[in-house]
Image (cartoon, rainbow, N blue to C red; front, side, top):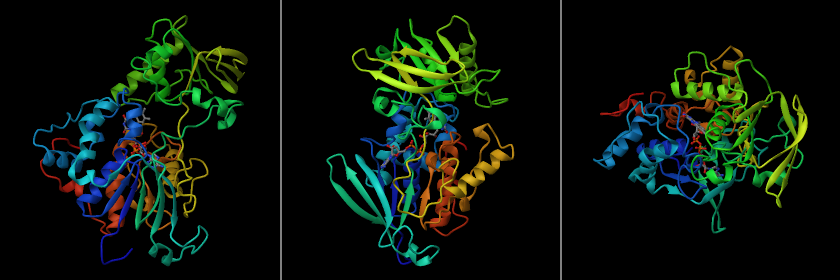
Length: 423
Ligand SMILES: Cc1cc2nc3c(=O)[nH]c(=O)nc-3n(C[C@H](O)[C@H](O)[C@H](O)COP(=O)(O)OP(=O)(O)OC[C@H]3O[C@@H](n4cnc5c(N)ncnc54)[C@H](O)[C@@H]3O)c2cc1C
């Protein structure tokens, strides 16, 4: 990095972590370009706006963000530290105003997708371990919604593009089931608002929900409230407590209540939910004429059955095509950056917390990649793992700027006066 001026930073993705990283960088005076694919910031969060966050606002907003919003508008009030906001409220009360604040607004460029990154004039295989590789800028190829492409340069790139836009598949061992790719546009891989704007699409219908995480639990508990809707809940494994593994002595009461309710619904006989455990999907056929699916199953409930809707809550994975020309070492199990993944897998192998609230960041060194000045932050840094928390991402931001700024003790969060939300 040149020493005579602050490096230009490109931040990819204006989700909660991209926004906070931009704020941190701008506060320190770095020139920043924040590039967002969606029409508005936090485009992924807005896709599940109806879902209630299970972490309180005090864990989801930073002291810097709160101070910036208080300085921007004397009438702005931070949500209560213990408030459990819907994702939409989190956007409207915090992320949206943050994106519109003076420090971020001029850096933000929406409707623009980052397609690819490279090291200028160095191919992927060039200059292994050569410090000169880091002297050249990174180049970014972007395309906006008008189809205009642009190449820009930056000395530092923070990839905060998340994973929500890149779902896993339904088939055996995680590959697409037969016919799934052709049917994908008719399958719901997100969290439909079945009690709100998507109600008509689901009410009175036969639904197949796949997955054993909190997203599936959310979908199933909502569907159970729709009159006349019958849901089959498919899971690959079977457990005595039910489809959702509850965190012992869960400190997040809302999360535990969700897990308990989903498991209760799955266990109830003659209720709106029927669980098919130890069952997998082998083939999917979407029939446009009748607007329904014929699905083939293997395992405990091997059969062929018809469903009106399919909700695949089977998780997400990072899109690594963006940085395929860079020297990034990916984990063979999670697709996350290897350095961080080895810390996270080490924690898990050592009996690490199932409770993601018990997670802490793994330290600045865990964020380093073989490619100099390229960092993956936020949910994408956890690869396919679903344990990422916003509070971990805020800590990653603090840590990455100790590296970029070459100051081990740099911590803006600790210097913010007059905060109304403790962390
Ligand atoms: C349903 C659900 C509930 C959750 N609840 C909680 C909770 O209660 N507490 C908690 O701590 N965590 C929760 N999480 C986990 C996590 O904190 C969130 O996923 C959070 O949104 C991650 O923020 P992020 O900024 O890393 O990524 P994202 O929010 O995914 O943001 C990434 C941004 O990058 C943009 N983007 C993607 N690709 C490109 C590209 N190529 N070019 C430009 N822009 C791009 C996207 O449009 C998006 O705006 C939840 C996750 C989900 C899915």
